[in-house]
Image (cartoon, rainbow, N blue to C red; front, side, top):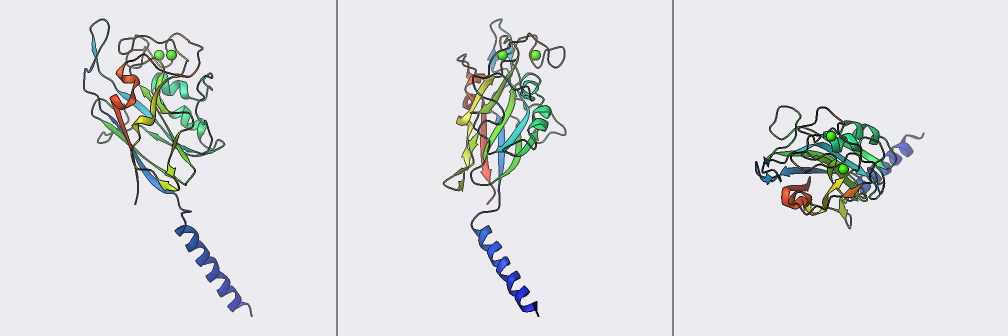
Length: 237
Ligand SMILES: [Ca+2]
Ligand SMILES: [Ca+2]
């Protein structure tokens, strides 16, 4: 006797679902592209040595949490940002963020476009990573400045707003990226320090700093992200 009632109910539920998705309850897919726009041997150290800039594998995190990865002016949290920033290894950070409060998704990007395996992006190379997000959610990125002791590129601690007035953002977001010092290892001169990524004896080698997370402000071009990289975002139509 309830057949008709059930049929009607199912129809109502379907039409409600259709209306809801038309109103945007499905996540938007974004492609994020990070390009190393520097040239080989673009930098000259104080001893005259030429050096090239590379960026390490990193994380792309979608979140509602206000400061999911670090807080400027505070100590590193010991959740993996140190290995990301000192050794270019995002795996510990990704693991600790997965499933944490206010974290919607965590993606690791580690293979340059056109490469057969993981590695840094050298001058001219790029990473691409895809994330999905709903209005109100934000994006944080982390990757190592490869010629440093413990510096990482990331947006402000609150991340990048992926939607403006409910509409997905699109285009160049490099101006929102900054160079940060995580405060775990004493800085040497960029490009030639013996305890920096390309030259250190092993991971986590260098003098402990016991410092705070702060922006790198040494006036060099690599401290100004738009001078050395291009980060773009494109929502799927
Ligand atoms: Ca440091
Ligand atoms: Ca080191």
